[in-house]
Image (cartoon, rainbow, N blue to C red; front, side, top):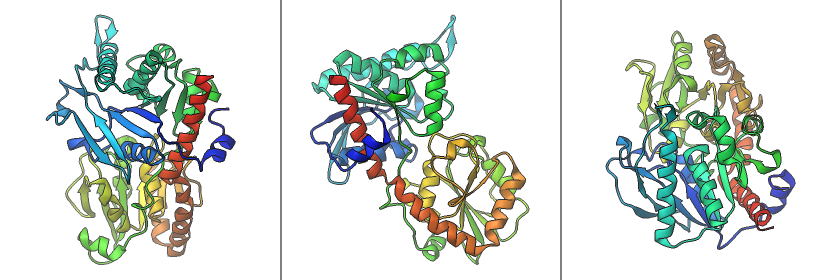
Length: 403
């Protein structure tokens, strides 16, 4: 059965070669956006290392300011001994707003899908499988194009609240995604949501939590890291990596530490929440993804009281660096953490967040035990192992499609 654990584990050591994978991902990190959504690039590169020939289609809107300057239409990236081709076809976006009783997102989806179809024709390249990252627009485009060229399609679903479906409606989404060969859910909770909200058959869903590059995310030199970030003395350093948004819990974290002494905050990210330029904040802002391990190395604890997630990369990255974690007790975190590797709290409860931080501050032995457990748990989330499992699952979907 496609997606079953025993099938994936039996095939995990197999490597596919000469399989052509078309990846559609409008959130693939480019130019000014290279720091955001780095996990998408990591996943594609890991898939390429399994032996797949990966070509990424990144539709670029001609009217979206975030894409200026437009940049090259095609380039190649080194992926650890392999090469990934990235194509950037242009399209006209009609955004997503109600107009005369319809949502313009439908028009955007059409132009988005058409530009990928034209690019496939231009390069005269026929993939063996079409993969779309997130339900809309890329996932739906992958399903449509797969049906058009007679190839299986896979939709990756990482939206914790199915936010990309809202402009289209769940009724339309059931039609648009009903022909997908498989849906890749990054958590068990998302699988449940696909079954309940989109009426997807359980056997078409594979659950694969996100993975990280364990050669990059690993324990570092604390003294050196603190020197780089200008941290002097011996404060208890708390790291936060994520969007500066209420859903990620930054506002609650700032409130939780407001009256604590002897701490320093290292905040990596950006977003609408205004972060003050004051003690105890020693850093705030974005970093290239390759420099995040240095920020984590400076920390005594990683705190992310997030309210909703697909599969939280930053928590996995912190565990891989051996940093004790304080995070949400929500079920959306259950595939990643348990009480051995994290102190779990109600993300809306500022007092609980503060108490968790104080408990770790005052118990070095507990921090050491959690750190060791984090390093052990992180091995389950090796991005290369995940890629092999996903590849084996995709191969089974392709065989089922041919049958």
